[in-house]
Amino acid sequence: MTATYQRIEVRPMSGALGAEICGVDLARDLDGETIAEIRRAFLEHLVICLRDQVLSVEQHKAFGRRFGALDVHPYVKPLDGHPEIIRIIKEPTDKQAFGGTNWHSDVPFFEAPSMGTILYAREVPPRDGDTAFANLYLGYEALSDGMKTMVNGMKAINTASMVYGVGSKMESENRTMGYLRRQEAEAEVAHPVVRTHPETRRKSLYLDRSFTSRFQDMTREESLPLIDFLCRHATRLEFTFRLNWEKNTVAFFDNRCTQHLAINDYNGFRRVVDRVTMAGDRPA
Ligand code: SIN
Image 1 (cartoon, rainbow, N blue to C red):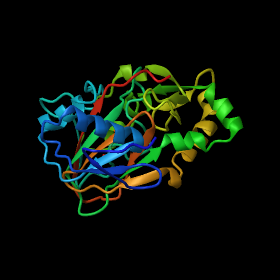
Image 2 (cartoon, rainbow, N blue to C red):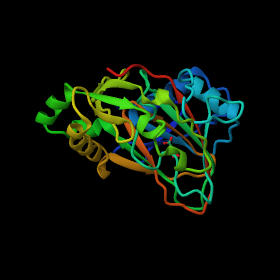
Image 3 (cartoon, protein in one colour):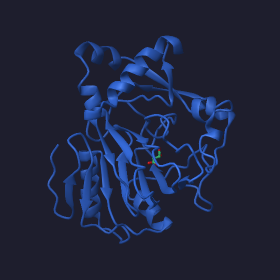
């Protein structure tokens, strides 16, 4: 898909995915055509970033609502007074970064996981603290025909239990953020390992190391070698790009066909990023 744009300027950031959008001030009440072009750029490039945006929490939420209803995360304590906002904070004394342990997509343990995530950098370290993104369409397309045939018929069993379950280690992962470890996190949902994007109709891999515990009708022990292979394959360097944050950068990514990893290489510095996610469809 190649789109032309009248309202915005779109500058691709890597061969695999990612584009910078220029000429837009998200603090303004954007007209429908500009929003439609932003949506086209998001579908074409999977991750779009906008620099130098000065946004209040309300303006961040309002921009998200132009693309769907905002989700509320069941296991991460939200920003006071804003249930739809997760404030991702790493203090200089924290050793772990939220979202920094494994490549993952957001909330794949929901029956209908989020369609997209909008991150907004409020404070950044003097260097480092990038977020890496992987294009899961490319991961699927680069598989052999035999592997494609096999994984097309498979379902991944996803659960929040390994990250947010009662016995999980999450509580100690980042001392600043609040996690709600709950019994309900043990619930499982089956999603296709290969999903078809509801808007682009392209196929992508859809499983990850944080939330996929096994394949349907298989044990975890049987499943792990293939989960490992597919997750390593999906995040091969040529399918990825790294977003270097600046204060006031917005990144909007398609959670249906990407994974991401918050790179934890800035111990001793503070980083604060606000996150909203927008409701999506049941993967098919
Ligand atoms: C996340 O996984 O939601 C965190 C992303 C980031 O902090 O860069």
